[in-house]
Length: 179
Image (cartoon, rainbow, N blue to C red; front, side):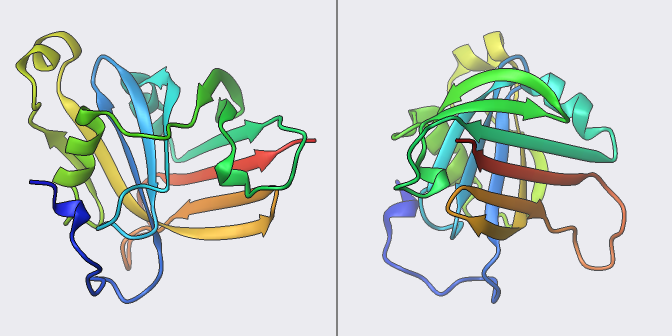
């Protein structure tokens, strides 16, 4: 049953924070999904050119900055509508990725399973036993982000730590279009 396709619901959270989900198989690549409402499909999903285990090692540090840079010459569309991205993590070039138009069955399973989760991290049971044996467990981190739109060519997401918590990793995600 696809619970994401139901009609519009009242939001559980009163503010308008963006939801970001980082997930991937332990032995596979990591995905980034951005949702305006956790009950709706992501407006942006991309497979990052880095292993989940490598990102988890980066998350052990106090600050993680992921930059997605588009080299498209046009500025007729919003920066998050671009398709080809150069990916950087803490200043190191990781490679290139292409934004997805449609989600795979496994990606849809993760987003659907986390529909009621506003923030947290953990492991999801694999839908397919083959993936469990070859790729390892499906890990995720889901958080709410402050979204800052600088211009048509730049946006940033800053992870919101739980109230009263000055601890934990500081995660920022930047979307830039260089001309």
